[in-house]
Image (tube, rainbow, N blue to C red; front, top):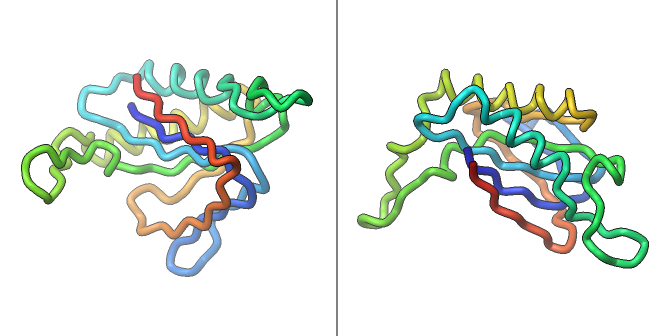
Length: 145
């Protein structure tokens, strides 16, 4: 699994012009699932996201997690994170997990985040989503397990 984790404010996700999810501040997490990812990975990914200290404390140091600041997570499925463009100019997505399995692991990650006390909202798996994202910092972390 691979996540692109971005600190955000006022982020929303729509499908076909309909608002699906919105968070006032927290993390936009783009999550990719690759072939061979296991059922244990969503819990490990959620634990890392929930505990990642990328919010500033009273001294301006990145020392607080999304839980510490009362933020939310907008979890967005993103199979293109496993696009390989090392051969030619058209990415190959052969490393991305099949949709049925990827959706299962994506939803498990959302459930695990919620179980850790992080309010989580999701997109629509496999849909053409439009995301309005107001980056904060910007702070962007790429994490893969």
